Structure formats: structure tokens, C-alpha cells
Image (cartoon, rainbow, N blue to C red; front, side, top):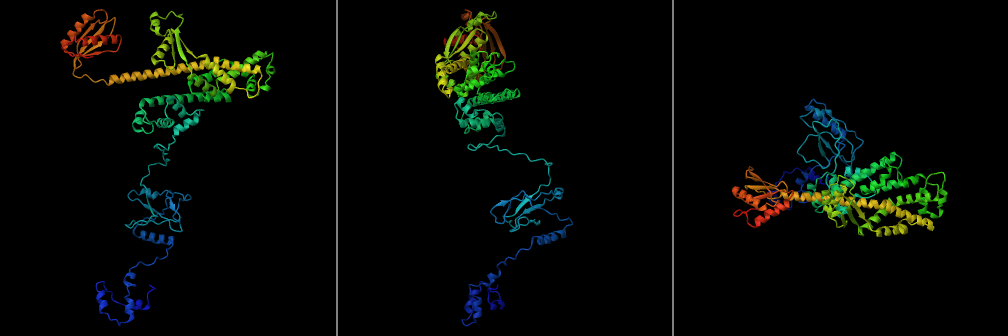
Length: 609
């Protein structure tokens, strides 16, 4: 208002509307006083200026404002005013408005009056006053005015049913394809069973599936997802695998997890017995199959007399075996000779003890076992079965004749059929067959050269006597320890694959039977095949009532006479469908009926089976 002239502020003029403004300008003379010309200058519209809002008045202190408003609220009611504090769990803006901060130093106080009033819920307003971020705000009545961005309404629940219990911990359940979610249970399992191999890599090697797919499958199974759910709704995570492939991966994963648990149980037992050493621990953590675990842990089982290497270590010859590899120049075998100690009385006994320790070290070395396994994959290895010596009187000649195909049998382990493995195992269990895995001598020779020249080569010069001792140790390790281990592994793998295939074959056959089209509204003839006691017949009506039963002997030279009986039964009951059971003589019975149908023996009926 100070910008206007003095005459403008003192003069009193009637307000003129916008419609009367042009006529007023025309009627006014040019010789009027300059006062009126300046007053109606378009650049200075007094009427518009008067309606502008007043300039902002500096804010009154918070405490005084709170007192005034609380006094007004106190007039209408008799209830005492409640002092409310801001919700410290909400973020409060800083004076700059760029960042958010919380007030950890403020303590939450429980409002008892709010819980008691169930009809009316108080509303808190948390706002930040510029320059005073920590002050309390007074409770204001709700209006239709827009709330500023700095104000947040928080409603407290009328009742509290938590009973001071801590809130439940939330876990992530989503599993994006790229960002994996860590599973609590699986992480604990990995910490407890920290093997020297990665379960994802082992699964990928054994199933020929990509590693990222194996990792996703493990995660899904650890989250308790079922195979049908994974196949239907997680196709992108498993690369569109089928249910059978998932079952195979699940079975191998469970075998590896069981192996890891057994390994750590063995480690705990050895720790209690104070028999655990660094080499034994490494050998146990390197085991990938149950056969390897049995091979490593066998000397330490209760009731075991211990291996030759274990007894040699007790005599103190382990240092000599390590010196032969690390620094053979310092090894003097005659220093270990003690005439009063059994096993160390002569130089030959000392050499034998060192040889047993070296053989045990070679047989439990991970790199050595990996080399011999890879070597066997490239060589011709066959399984042989022959007739065992029949010393038991319980063996029946008929049982022996059942295995006449496998009395002089030999086949490559890569080409042998699954049913042949199962038959050989049955013959071995009945003590009729003797089974052997034949590994060629070329594997032994190549393995010995590799050990002497590369893996177990002494790090310094060794005299011919020590080199000969090293060769004997490697040959003894292969013959006495490694070869039996390989045979057990091959037999176990062949048997496991054959059993899996038999289960899958049973499933395929059952699936074929279950998917057979139904024969509703037909009269059926059921045939139970047999040789000695004949084939049992039963004719069933469409309503499952037994119409007729009989016995025919189709495989005893009476086939023509029995065919006429079957023809009369079929024509008499107007039966056109024959159902043949799966049992003894089922193939012969099927061929018999197929021959009659082909000759149209049952005309005019169109008989099928």
C-alpha cells in the first residue's frame, strides 16, 4: 500500500463497474485534473490490488499456538487434554527437505486413553516446522482443506491383540530368474556340511544338465516345491525339463546330501576318538560316493583291526614315507631299524611299513583317483560271469538252468543291458554265478607310469633303491586298494542304473495299461493263462455279472478240441472281446487266439483281444 500516491490513498471514489468504465472515459473532459487521470491509469488497478492476500505475518511461537488451540478445545468438553507425541517410526523431513531422518532418541509412550475409547479414534499429524524439526504438534480438527506434503496422518487401532509379542519375521518368497533369494534352510545345510566339492557341479556332471539349471532346481526343492508345480509353473527356471528328469536330479541330490551327512557323522566320531588327522579329514571331505566313504572310513570302524598302513604309522614310519617324496636325500632307512620292536627289527620290515603307508596315501589321493577313473572311461572294461562251484546242496538244478545264458558271459560295461545286470545279480545272490570286473593290464601300466613320473615323483634326486620302493608301493596300492574300489564303484553304478530303469519300465507299462480305452457295454471273456492247470475262462456281462466259467487246456495237445468249446461260448453269449491276463504262458495264449482270429474261426463274430 505504500507504493500508491498520497492523493490516491486519501480520495474516496465510488466503485465503478466494468460496464460503466468506457462511458465514463468518454464523458470525462481532457482538461480534468491530473489526479483523476493518474487514479484511473490502467497500469495501477486499485480494485484488483485491494483483493490481493495480505503479506505473511511472522509465525507465532509453537508453545503459544498450542496453548490457544487447546484452550478453545477445552471450552466444549470436560475431558482433560492429552499430550501426544509424534510417531517416531515415521520418517521426518529435515529443514532442507532433501533427506529423511528419524528421531531415535524419542521414546514411544503407550496411550492408555486411546485404547479405552473405542468409539473415537484420535488422529496424529506429524509435520516438520522449518527450523524446528523436533517440536510437538497440536491436535487440530479435521477440515476439507488440502493437507500439505509435510503432514502425514496416522491412525491408531482401537484394540491391540498382539499381547506384547514380537512381530513375525518376514522372508522373501519370490525367486527372480537373475537375483537368487538366499534360503535359510539351505544356507544352514551348506554351512554344516561343507564338502570339498560343489553339489551343483556334481549334479551337472552326473545328469548332463547345465549348472544354472541345477542351481535353480536345488533352490526350488529346498523351498519345498513339488515336481508337478515346478514342471507347470517354473518352466523358465528349469529350461523346460520333464518330470522324469527332475526326479532323477532330485534322487541324485538326496544321495549327495545323505553322503554329506554321513561324512560329517564320521568326522564327529573320529574327533571323539581322537583319531582325526588332516589327511583323513581331507580324504573324507573329498568323497563323492558311499563306496569312497566306506573305503576311507573302513579302518576306523569299531571292531576293525586297522590297516597295514595304520599299524606302520603307529610304529613311527610316516616320517620316512614323507621324506621319500619331499626330500629323499635325508632318508636313511637303517635309522628306523630297532631289533627289539616287532615290525622294525630288520630293514625289510621297515621298507614294508613305508610301502604300506605310501600305498595308502596314493589310494586316498583325490587327484590320483580322478586320473584312474578318467583312464578307465577310455579303456575297454567288461563284466564277466561264470558258473560257480555248486558246493551248496540247496541249489536246485532248475535254478541253474535258468542262468544258462550267463554261465560264460562277457560284455562291455558300456553296452550291457539293464535286465542282464539284474539277472547276473540274482544268480550271484543265489550263489550260482561268479561275477568279476575285468580291467585290462594297460590301465595298470599307464597308471603306474603316471604316478612315478608325475604325481608321486620325488621332489629331489632319489637313489634306485628308493625309486624301486616307490614303484612297489604304487603297484601294491593299485592291486590291493584301488582295483577293488573301482570294481565296487562299477558294480554299484550298473546296479543302480538297472534298478532305476526297471522302475521306469514298470511305470511305462502301468501308464499304458491305465490309458487303455475302456470297453463299456460289452460282454467280455477273461482268460487266465497257464500250462499244467490249464487256462481259466470267465464270461462277464456288461453289468459285471459272471455268466459262465470254464477251464481249457490250450497247450497240452488239445488245442483243436478246446477251440470248438471256446467258439460255442463266444457265440452263445454274443461275446466279441477277449481279455488275456499277464502271467505264465501269456505269450503262447496270445499267439493261439491271434491265429484263430486270423483264420476267422469265430465268424460271424468280429472277435478282438
